[in-house]
Amino acid sequence: MATITYPTLMEIDFGAIQVLGDALRRNGIKRPLICTDKGVVDCGVFDMVRSVLPNEITPTVFDGTPGNPTEKAVREALALYKENDCDGIIAIGGGSSIDLGKGVALTVSHDGPINDWSAMNGGKDKIGKAPPIIAIPTTAGTGSEVGGGSVLITDDGHKVVVVSSNLIPKMAICDPELTLSLPKHLTAATGMDAMAHCIEAYLTNAINPPAAAIGLDGLERVVTYLKRAVDDGNDRDARWNMMMAASEGAMAFAKGLGSVHSMSHAVGANDKLGAHHGTLNAVFLPTVLRFNADHVGNKYEQIRRAMGLADNANISDWISEYNQTLGLPENLGAMGVTADMVPGLATHCMTDACHFANPKRPTVEEYEKMFIEAIG
Image (tube, rainbow, N blue to C red; front, side, top):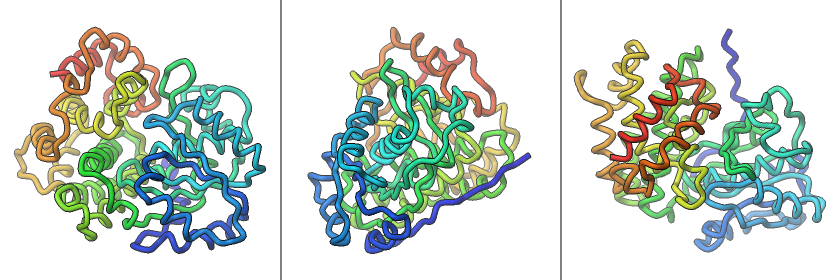
């Protein structure tokens, strides 16, 4: 049985942040907690958003979102929410800030540690009503603005997925104007995050033709527009299309994701490495595509068509070369991952929610081989 739902109201265009006041009124939010990070504040994007808040709105700001959001940061933001009697959340930033906002929404109405509500522990069926979230992405990558998933590092150092229809933002305000100041390396890394979502979602065994079609459309946009956005951050056409591709990637992973994300989550849980999620996805994607090649039927033919590649093109090799043209790391070793870390990383993958949607579930030994290959 296929269940197909796309409930997020999405506004996308230059100047879309002008609808923020209407969005708050529509959802009964008068005292929002704004979840963001210091980078968004320092670059001036936060001021652009705050300038359109209606006078009757009394916001509280939490700008301490870490690069990989943690349960500790969720607690700190939750304390502000309760202290100021907030009644909703505005999440401004990349996937980290939006995921943190979802974590706060969860903990406002659900007691206990985050892991109690993870997908692996049946959280999808247990999570009830949560405060309304308005999501305003400032990157074109995770697509968290249109999904109900949140990836958080728990107090015990594991990266877990929390997912529920009750955590889907009530509205996604996608204004490409907010991405114009994004540096080249973040444009590249977040863009490849969107590519990984589109490809991995398409390859899962779940039956959801609309999601599959959306993923292929998003993939075509990434291949067409990402390099343009990296080369010229003020290319407005490229920025609009990349923001659309990012949201499409998240709509596509209604089908699930796979081992690219399991491996990225494992490395991302290591706070000493501080590895960027999108960059990890870019590096792991060629390796996992090689692993999956014999387990997806003729799906690679459709992926080649969406990417505009020749019928005999090697998708993994193409992506590895593309990563280099974007200035991304050549391999996992360049990101500080060493062979002695591999056993622990492989074990982490086995309990990651995304592992179970991969076309063929790797064994621990197969994960170890893929990590070694990706280290280079």
